Length: 204
Image 1 (cartoon, rainbow, N blue to C red):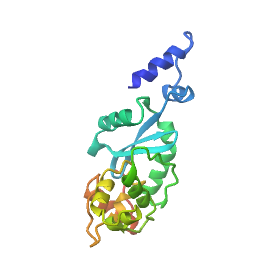
Image 2 (image 1 turned 120 degrees about the vertical axis):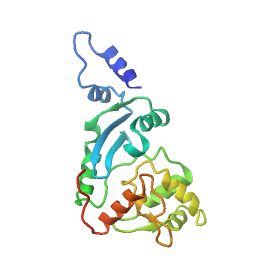
Image 3 (image 1 turned 90 degrees about the horizontal axis):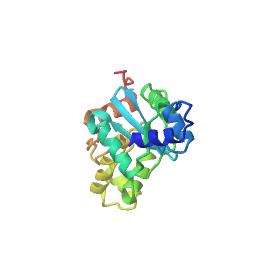
Image 4 (image 1 turned 180 degrees about the horizontal axis):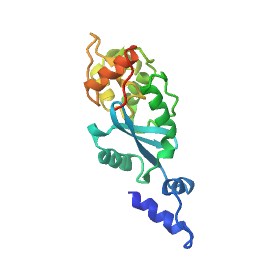
């Protein structure tokens, strides 16, 4: 999937000139639909992917696998995908600030195309839960228009393609239980602890 972009760039480039930085050349030529980069975080290595619309994917690499995430993006978004750290500078900066305790609200544009219908409505309701607060599966289900569909809300949160930024870790059972979390419950505990005012996450 990456060689397709490289082949097209080399076809377009003058024969006497070397192809410049591949990701920048691809973006300039309108060939780059999905850019990705990794970030070493206190919760492990994250894979971030963005499109011209905004951040489309954030994944825990040890949980989902980088190759699997990239294959899904190539299938569901576009095969014109390339590693391009400069395209992810702002998401990486905001996440670094968040982990350092210096940011409580993400200001990133989001690309919601990997979500649909009820799932998207649940995640959009979740995105509005503020830093340091929590909500419940029942509450976000109600906000998504289906008050009794709290189990389906749990499934929607479990498929969240942009965790942390869309803070599904802030959604709990009505009785206060943690529920589930795509990245594992220990990560959910750590995120909630930091947001409740406990010491910030240390670098890995």
